[in-house]
Amino acid sequence: MRLMGLILALKLNVWMFWEKMRELAVDDPRRIFHCFKVGLALTLVSLFYYIGPLYDGVGGTAMWGIFTVIVIFECTVGATLSKGLNRGMATLVAGAFGFVVYWLASHFGEKAEPVVLGISVFFIVSAVTFLRFIPAVKTQFDYGVLIFILTFSLVSISGYRENKLFELAHQRLSTIAIGGFMCIVISIFICPIWAGEELHQLITCNIEKLADSLDGCVFEYFNESASTADNEEPGQKSQAYTSVLINSKATEESLAKFAQWEPPHGRFWFWHPWKQYLKISAAIRCCTYRVEALNGSINSEIKAPKFMKKHISDACMKLSSQFSMVLKELATTTKSMRRSSNIEFLVSKMNCAVEDLRNALDSLPHQLPLPLPPPSIEAMKEKNPCIWTINMPLTEVMPLVVVTSLLIEIAGRIQGVVDAVNELAILANFKPAVGKSKLRDNN
Image 1 (spheres, rainbow, N blue to C red):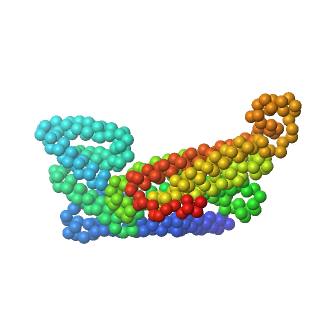
Image 2 (image 1 turned 45 degrees about the vertical axis):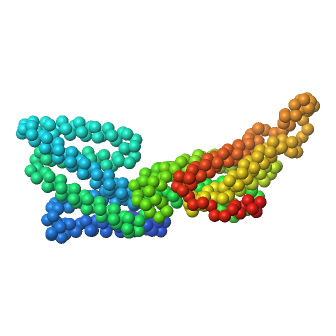
Image 3 (image 1 turned 120 degrees about the horizontal axis):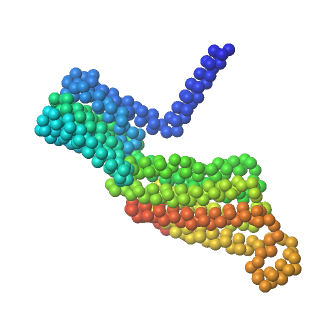
C-alpha cells in the first residue's frame, strides 16, 4: 500500500508539473520559440567543435562561444543586446589592458614580474569595482564591468605562465564574438521579442486595469441589491489593480533599461523616450494605491447607512464612469500613439463630476430624515446654521466619508496620469488627432 501510495503521489506530481508547463506555454507561446532559438544558437556554435577546420581555427577556446550563448541569450532583444555588447566591449578592453600590463611587467625582470602583476591587478580591479557603485554604471553597464574584471584577471594572471598569450586572447575574443553574433542575429531576425514593445503594452494594460478596478469597486459598493451573479464580474474587476502593484515596478524598470539598447523597430525609432513610460507607471501606481485603499474601505466590516449611500450613489457612480472614460481614452492614446481629441473634454467632465459629488456631500446633512434635536441644540443651530443635526454614531458616517474622499483624491491622481501621457505624446511625436471630438459634439 505504501508503494502504491508513493507511485500515485509521483504520478500526481508529474501531472501537476506538466499542467504548469502547459499553462506557461499557453499563456505566452513565445516562450517556446525562445527555447528553440537558444537551442539553435548553441547548435550552430557547437559546430566549431564538430567540424575539424573550424576547430583548428579556434582551438580549445570554442567552449567560450558556448559559454557566451548560455550567458547572454535572453528572452528580449534588448536584454540580449545589452549583455552581448557589454560582454564584447568589456572583453576587448580588458584583454587590451591585461596584455599591456603583462607586457610592462615582463620588462621588470623575472623576479619582479609577479610583484608588478599582483600590484596592477589589485589597483585596477579595485578601481573598476568601485565603478559598480555609480548608479548610472550600475544600471546600464554592471554586467560589462563584471566581465572586465574577470577577463582582465584571467589575461594578466595567465600571461605569467602562458607563452602564447596574444594568440590565446585572440582565439577567446573570436569565439566570444562568434557566440555573441549568433545570439544577436537569431534574437533579432527569428520571432523577436522587443523589450520596448513589451513595455508599451504593459503600460497600456495597466491603465486599462486601473479603469476596470475603479468601475468594479464603485459598482460593488453602491449596488448591494444586485444579485450574486451580477456582482461576480465587478468583483473580479475590482481586484484587477493587484497585478499593477505586484512586481510591476521592477519589470517596467528592467524593460525600460533594455529598450534603450534596441535598434529602431516598428513604431519606435532612435531616442524614443522610454524613461517617460516610467513616469507614467509611477503616476499609475500612485493612483492604484488609492484604489487599494478604496477597496479596503469598501470591504470594511463597518457599513454606512443605506439611505446615506443612496443619497450620493448617483454622484459617485457618475464620477466612476468619468474615471473609466478618461483612463480608457488614455489607454487608447498610448496604444495607438495618436493624440486624443477628446481627453480635454473628458477631464473637464470628470472635474464637473467631482464638484457634483462635493455638492451632494454638502447637502447630505440637510436631506437626512433625522429626529428633531433638543431645544438647546436647535437654538445653537439658529445662531450657527453650519452645525449639523445628525444624531447617529460617527462610526456609521466615517466609511462613507472615507470612500467619497478617496474618490475625490483619485480624480487628482488621474490628472497626474493625464499629464504624463500628454508629455509622452509630445516627446514621442504622437500622430495628430483625427477629426473633432465626437463626445463634445454629442454633448
